[in-house]
Image (cartoon, rainbow over all chains, first blue to last red; front, side):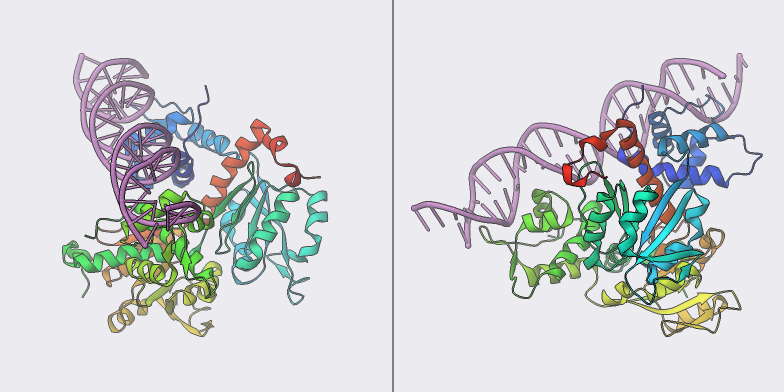
Length: 222
Length: 222
DNA sequence: TAGATTGTTAATCGATTAACAATC
DNA sequence: TAGATTGTTAATCGATTAACAATC
């Protein structure tokens, strides 16, 4: 019954969810074409994605918004809230600790760790910064679902090893380095500078081909 | 000669670059297998990627580190530094303004904008926060290459429209909403909560299949 | 020459899309 | 019934990989 869900489909489900959340309470149904234009894909792909997760719509009508929303949440494993520990209370780590988009969507940062004595003991967004030495004992008492790494690159692999040894199955890594985890654990990598570098490539090719002049009138500069 | 470089290849070039940058000055050559293990892909794929950008190695030896580094930089359009404007000096925006990884890799944030009177006039990382009303006149005087959007979702599309009308060809969007740009312009989307949601899926399937017990000994918790 | 590693082919795999029958 | 939209097939496209000849 539940076939394997392709990676590319999983990566699009949050976008569908975001669109469903943006609809007013009056909107009881949604069409594949709506979801498609709201998430920048083809309508056929939306229907295929939804069929992978076992969603069924009504021909001539569309999909029930509430039902679809619940199904996506369930399939993503978000039926219950998840707890998160954050390692690294520097510049980026502090911003992540304060970021409202996590709590809003059911990800609760329960503790923040650092090794800098100037930071340990202070609070960010109401959460006390604890010394990284406490990580294992804390996690033994209160297991968490996800670890976010916002340390310098040099520390990232070591921190990841400790998180996984302490039973954390999933890591979101913001340090600009690839980290290795054993089978069964999962990492996702977000590298901010890499995003700009990829963007630079597409600007570069645009400049070379001189495609500025092919921009529609209203978009042209000057 | 220069064939089109596949999207997936472009997305991996920054990872190769990062590995080359991590090598000591003693390392004059690098093998496809090194690059592969450092960036989590197959060695054949590395060689294919490198052949797309026109890199040539020496059979039995490998690739020249310095030459390869320069070639990747050139192909990504990073031979010269790029200028960046940042819109939104809130929590995340401020962290991005202070993020050292941008400047280090040749992306210079030249100005920061906000509409909140409590923020306008203050400084982050030495850069004065200007009122968003000034955006167009500033960009006319000093064109920029990239705009980073770190506003609330509700403002993101409007800001993107203004950036593009003012001649900015590339946007990195951190607001949790899809933004549309005309052909010729490029957007990349980074949605922090989406990353956690995708991660949650893989934890979920792990829990269901009970694969904890298949983890190698040293990784098991407890 | 012997050993090593590239460069490329060909097979495979997975994702995307057009198109249309099914059916509300 | 007529109109609309799903669900799925089949074709296409693009990315990945094993394998090995080429060659330093």
